[in-house]
Amino acid sequence: MKIRTRFSPSPTGDLHLGGARTALYSWLFARHHNGKFVLRIEDTDLKRSHQSSSDAIIEDLRWLNLDWDEGPHYQTRRLNRYNAIIKQMLKANTAYKCYCSKKRLDALRKNQMAIGQKPHYDGYCRDDNTKPIDYNTYVVRFKNPEEGSVIFYDKIHGRIEFNNQELDDLIIRRSDGSPTYNFCVVIDDWDMDITHVIRGVDHINNTPRQINILKAIGATIPVYAHVSMILDIDGKKLSKRKGDLRVTQYRNEGYLPEALLNYLVRLGWSHGDREIFNLNEMQQLFTLEGLSKSPSTMNVTKLKWLNQHYINHLAPEYIKTHLQWQMRSEKINTENGPKPEDIVKLLGNRCNTLKAMASTCRYFYEEFQGYDAGAAKKYFYNQAESSKKSLEGIRLKLAAIINWTPTEIGNAIHAASNELVGGIRTLGMPVRIAVTGSSESPSLDVTLYTIGQQRCLSRIDKALIYINRQGHGSS
Ligand code: GLU
Image 1 (spheres, helix red, strand yellow):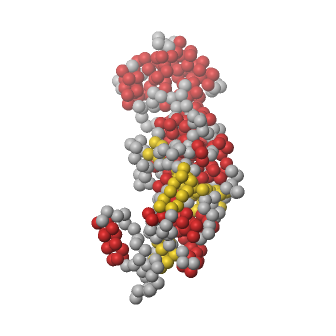
Image 2 (cartoon, helix red, strand yellow):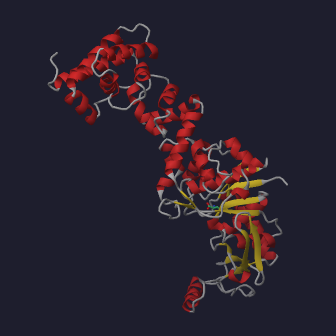
Image 3 (tube, protein in one colour):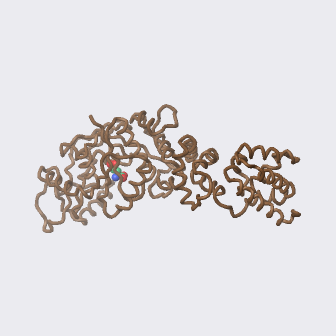
């Protein structure tokens, strides 16, 4: 059997982490089995669906590198097909027209609730073929079997049984002629030869209804795997409404797709206690048996750890493409300065997101506007005299370097330190603050090297002027 899976988002908002994880699992399962992965946009709810959301979801899937073999299929372009099946079902008496008015249905619901029953349609029009006066207004309902039960074996949750009496006759076409969600899903899964439906556990109650419709139209029933929920740190269900769970948000915050995918695959799936999986390894190792029944909880610390791992383990030439995107959004002018891949090498073990890396690396490209207040107070004010000596000493040595290399710079730092009472401990910080504006940077020799000779000298000059202006200098 050729494995075929699908990801079928409703374009009612952006792609969020739960959706991305479902897409990943469906994609992995198809890829693991050399099957096909189909993308389907479930946009029949016209009021809540937006083309801009479809476009954004597609862009996010591309960013995540989850490619599809077929689609995107849009349900709104398949209305003729749905209507043709409904016509056949009406003829075959597996569906019927229901003329019940809203008034009647409201009263029915009210009465059922009053006697403690779960509201359900009572089948009033099921076997009654007499048309009321206003016979143009009707919905089409599926004739759900009245007896027996639906049993299916969920790949994650095991045997599941629903009694047919609990399932009322579902509306498959609204009075405005539009087919409903559960019906379209069934027809699509059938037409698209979907063998495995991998989706969120919130759809588990739809499954018996969908199976009954599949049976009624003579379609093959796919295998179902309902993926557990993701809980946020407070133990609450992740929700689309909380904007901070959007995939775009993580992209904007400087996470790599590799890190996000690795994070998501482990959020509900395991292979021993291994944590790091690249996309190829995930494809090789992924099985539905590894999926967990219990909900998983978000852990941003782990995501950051994975992100840093990938920043440091993937080729800097690749990471740079993501860094450049961040640099553009931070409006850093990179015309004069190091190659972005060098920044990746330099700051990889200091930054766990590329946004942090972009904002940290600004001083390599542009003049900074001021010094970190605490650092300046300590070194350029309280310890002004010794800082001044350090800066003057290193300036002379740096200016004399003919071949600007980290080794030569290292020698200069060493020589200048030797002339000071506290050695490198006295010299290091003032120089670092003078050239970067802050007290944190990679090792001094490489930092100075990357900033460049002229820039270093002029920044040291500026720092000396600053110290003098504080009233502690004599020159
Ligand atoms: N369109 C549904 C959603 O976005 C998914 C339906 C399905 O996977 O069967 O939640």
